[in-house]
View 1: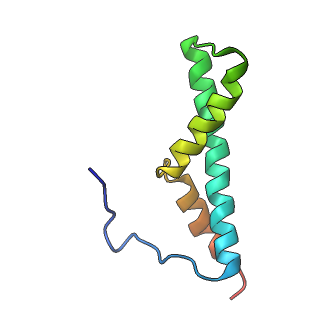
View 2: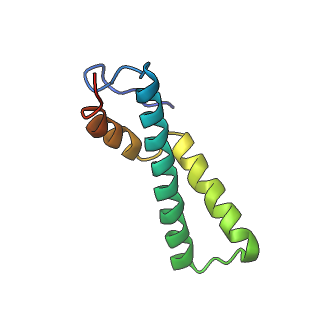
Length: 86
């Protein structure tokens, strides 16, 4: 099941190069944040993947962000895009 946001909260897809760069930076930031969050959750569970842990953590964080994340990238983009020159 895919959740669709109401039309009033959706923002238009960025089209200018600076908007696209900002959107990518926001997505990348969310991926790093989610990787760190996943790593901490993994530590608290006592799971140890050995030397593969770093790779698994990064893959999980990137996958989580790519599938929609927690909405952090969207919030940051909305805030930061106000400061781009028009």
